[in-house]
Length: 233
Ligand code: ATP
Image 1 (cartoon, rainbow, N blue to C red):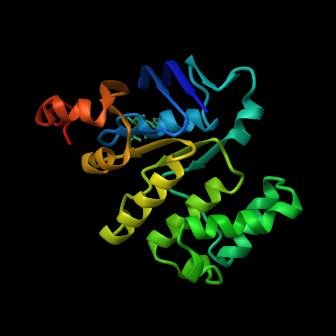
Image 2 (image 1 turned 90 degrees about the horizontal axis):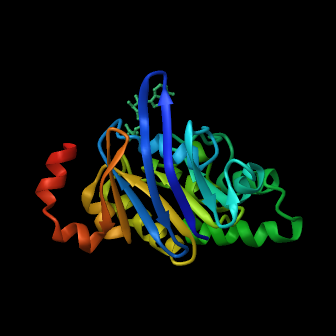
């Protein structure tokens, strides 16, 4: 599904956290947001996920606008927040069944959907474990499975690899690539190499603005040093 963001702006009191940003992402494309702490990535993603209302601007998901069809958009989006709360005392498979029911997935579809997500997220050996016993990387995989359970067309992942060890980072990037083959993925990160290796298109944010954007090869042609210095990463 195509996503079009136009002049999106969000203030917190007098501070412009997101300053008139515009971009487009297509189905089958992974769009990455790169930027230091406080750049405005999370705020942008929360607006896209319907958790915050912008002060100005619009977002359309296909034919649906956030101002007119907010309810419909909720079912189109899968969102992994930066700090994802999970039910530690539940086991993985019960948790994903529970989330499926919250999404009103028809009963006859739930088992196959849950098993597909367990496979996609590499959770086969952990499906009967309590979430509280899992490592940070495996918890993040459960979070991704949760975000995808209702088969959303647009998937928003806020810093999914932050704080993970290199093995888990590699595994999660592979999952994101697989998701990006058929869905529109919006991903944020602090890590330049992560965005370069995972994304088709990159938006570099600083102080609420997009300070550089393009395909990864276009940005590579520009001076890396120049834009990293500009945003202090
Ligand atoms: P990080 O990588 O640390 O998550 P970020 O790029 O996601 O950073 P945001 O979390 O979007 O950045 O924050 C953008 C700016 O908005 C920051 O200056 C932040 O302090 C401010 N901000 C974010 N949420 C709120 C809030 N609920 N109330 C007030 N200010 C906020």
